[in-house]
Image (cartoon, rainbow, N blue to C red; front, side, top):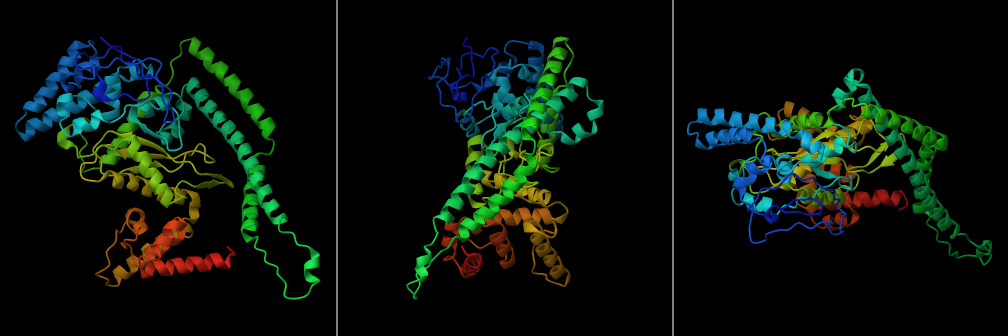
Length: 538
């Protein structure tokens, strides 16, 4: 019987042998940038495909036979149910059995002792291979099973990876409100863990800003050198008119003003950096020793994995909504034609970030960051993604927010599911950035006034005016139209909304140049934009 080790970067379901069930094996580590060959190759019978009816057996790997038989009986009762009453009763039993099994296997996941089939249960919500039919079988077979345990430029994780990242302290637990309210009730080692995470974050921020300051100084020096290169010889005026003096350093001066503002903020933050870092490293060492001594005495630690799995269930409920399909097990009868994968999300985020360059921009106390939020793919039948939190409230300087995206939309194209999550993140991030001024400044303030204007026109009898009365939902809908259609020259927004997005969420210059020839409204916006640049000396 083969030992399925996940050391290789990519493993596919279609590569698993059909003649056997995997033994318990530990998942290895991989990254998006990893290209090194696997240390130990998997022996694969390429002549065979996965026999999906072995999936349930793979979850147990020859253990807990009675529980396996019990779940098999529940699955059979669902398949054999004929009336809607029988179907609903069996559906409830299947859901309860799945959640119970998932909670029981968390200990194996935490210790990296779970089989590949258990990983797939958490990642895809798979329980019975018999419930997966074509074309979904092919979709699963061709989806890479790569294990990511580092935060990259676009950090997108499946549920199993996400929970392990939380367990290892690389991602902050998602139940942040509960964590704040119950801090006094935590065990001593939990408090120490939380303190250590805060110290480590502060050290990383300090070191990051030191490097950022050095980069800004280099850019500042380049801009000053460019201005110095434009020095003139006083004798240029002695020959009399006409004088040939053409100097334009406006771009360099603007860059210097921006860099000075940035460096002033960083300098305030880095005052006493050396002493602060040394002190924090010293405190971290003490905390590590305390945590180590407590671990050696066998004191129990808080179950971060169980809490995070509970938080993921809440995420799933929010993705599905009150009228959606909340069945926790994946089955072809409930799925659409697509599965949203990590590769799909990364590709779309890059595409949309190109259109909205400040999508992830954040400025806190003068310190700037442009970090893509953490993205989790949850296995559920949701039709839209959403923003769990716009910013890491324990690390406002350089922390990342969290975005949740469902994997199995039945009626919505995957790109719309992804952009809906980014749109909500964009709105909440801007509100958080502006604070109490969100109704007066920036895109949120101007869109708020535009939305209020629509309401007034509606109250005055404007029967032909159609818009979403909910402010956030209205913005999300218009943002999607702006990113998907208007950026391609297809006019879907009102004249006022188009102008708002054009000015506050500017498209790249090359796209603006193309749009100016796609219609009168785009031409007017482009000309106004050119006049603004000219007035600023660009």
